[in-house]
Length: 154
Image 1 (tube, rainbow, N blue to C red):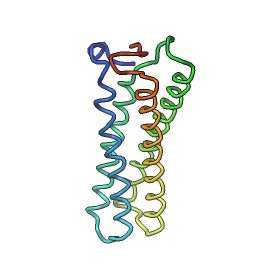
Image 2: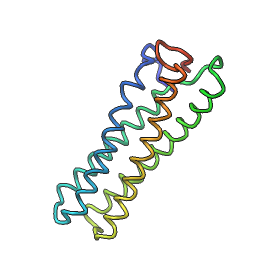
Image 3: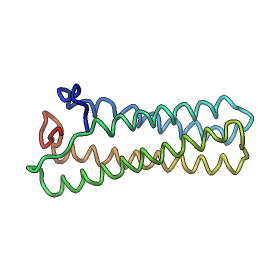
Image 4: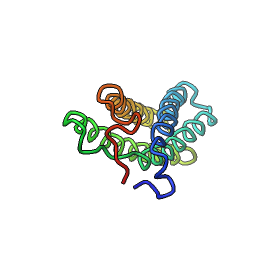
């Protein structure tokens, strides 16, 4: 699903994917701070901004991912499938978190809602961490990706 003009850049995914990872972790950290500074509307907006930017980055990272080729080991293909599934779940969960955070900025912001949001933000941070772990396994254990090993562009 990589656009034609990006076909010459199979390394876009590892270049882009680090931004949503950091932004999702910052969103969770900022949402944690919201719990202690209830009156700080700026922190709520900051957590929203981090989550929206992370969601956009996750969307781009998902769509710049490549497919694993048939010459990869079964273990590597299994890790790839988990990585791809977790990436999809992370993307949709971060979108949900962004929408919920936005809805609480103006209309409904109670302490228990902020706790639920923090739980959701932490869930997204955990999801992206596990997804990144599987990506690292593919690269460092199975050699998928470096110098184009085991990948095929659509």
